[in-house]
Length: 304
Image (tube, rainbow, N blue to C red; front, side, top):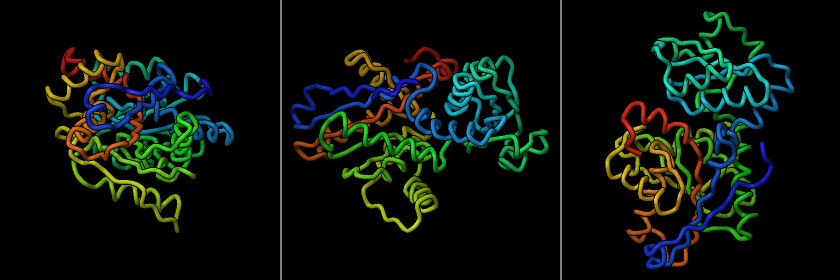
């Protein structure tokens, strides 16, 4: 994996000029073709810990289209670690693109029904898996070491810009990326999260993460925009897909329809509505997830 910073590209269009707002996109989708963005940042210190503690397996959990399963399998192949993926739901043949890739990377796929899956680590003995041999990553990959990796992202952005932006925006799934940014030292900016899931629970999820891993600390530098989920996780509309396709045509940057596409749509909508004051400087983080487009096309066709 490269140690160089991922690119930070400024975007230009008539709306940004009209509203006197500057917008950059942090291209964390370019970290690695198969281990992109926040998934790499979440995994990097966990991989180091797994190696240092001489664990035989890197084990994690996820659904059939999980970006985290994809990334963990890729990391195992890149760093010569054996991986086990406990997959929610019955096995369907042929495997979808995500699970096919994971299997080709050498991941041992274990399929369990949804009720059993909810037991997480408690179900491992029934699968003849020894906890002592495994470094266990939670579903989505969010833990304290993951937050440490994501915290570096904010400081990297400031180093590249040579100033502190007014806002840093990120999409949210499990809340690990935004929690890491919020915790990042010397990051004197406001963090805005765009949840990919429907509901207003992300505020509590992130506060719980921070209080669990960093007790006795107070954070007030973040907020959420909960109106850009397009119906919920993995839901979409023609409006969203048209935006993603137009954005790619204008900027030659591919967005995914699950996370980053919704966030970028939301940012432009908020700019148009005057949410950001004149002179605001905003950085949007492209957290990758582009491998999910293959799964999206398998389910819905070549809409993007």
